[in-house]
Image (cartoon, rainbow, N blue to C red; front, side, top):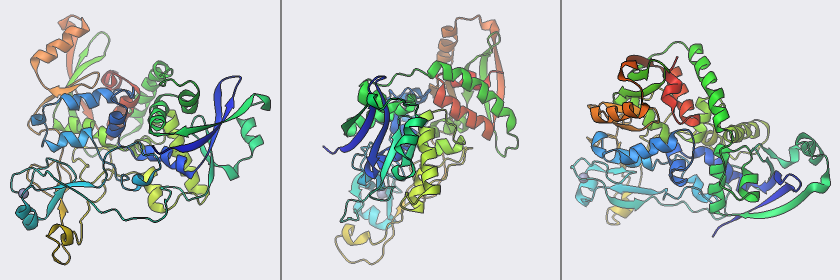
Length: 462
Ligand SMILES: [Zn+2]
């Protein structure tokens, strides 16, 4: 099993990690978290991330009959979203993500593949002939002789505080660091060396989403992180969310949603909406963590993630630490995987262009030299095997019910009655109203989904 070594300086009196010191291999792993799509994080943490209502949203997709989605492959895209950085991340000493990054699928009929030259990154995408792509292949790996670092230049030492501020060891002195962290007595400090394997990497991922001291949680207290700040956060966020709505103005496109709310408490009970609103929601699962921090202007409310993001920005601005401009973009403005963009998504997260493979023919066309052959990627969201980007996940003709806790299902009067019953309020106190969402509201919804387990009431109540 691969491990990476980490040196911890521990305050033995308070049983806390003061800071960690490591080479680029470990910091690469931390930074790679920014490239992971939200759905991948939920999957890796076994739907127990406790990030707002994201676990619930993920489970909704799991429970959703694929007939309510544009194609069968949509479900896989949402439950196992892929990342534009997945191939570089293969070189991490310990990779949190366990999906095979170079996998792709072609038509089971070889003749059809030769003729139409189509592939998909997902099993079950509709091929032109009507069959589903299920012939699995792997893109060739370009072998590197030396084990390269991924995002950072080699042979550098970094200092990482317990709340994940990462700095180059050369730019900070021990004295100033200890003073900054409020350490008075050097006698209480002790050095510990820990080996970090995939288990610890996943624990760190979980912990940094909830806690302000992930190293202490994972290496000293050996507990799965506890969400101490959640309730308190919820309160603060509600105030913030509302003030932000007012600040934004102009909007090109807006989405209409019907909300049923309790007149007395002014809390939303559930919303009824078309595929446009559901696409907005579902695609949150496909957003890489770094793109969420960028969209929310460095204030995702997930403290350690914001700190990690800001650290990359500082390292990129001040030192020659980040390997290339491309690496920097992968962390600070991570793109969606090809074809993961949605026409209905109001928030702008760019998708990577899909790969047009060249010379692919030599191997697949019976080792014959067929010269340059291009094959094109099918958009798995489109039923007509189009290679054009865009489209959406939720079926266009379906109306959906979204509960306050982000359970998404097709509209049914029976389940609506269930939701109303749970409230235990007289029917006469319920009102229906129409609300419109533009970019500002969708940003607030995204933020509410990160911090709250009932984002609808937070968003729509006055
Ligand atoms: Zn085919």
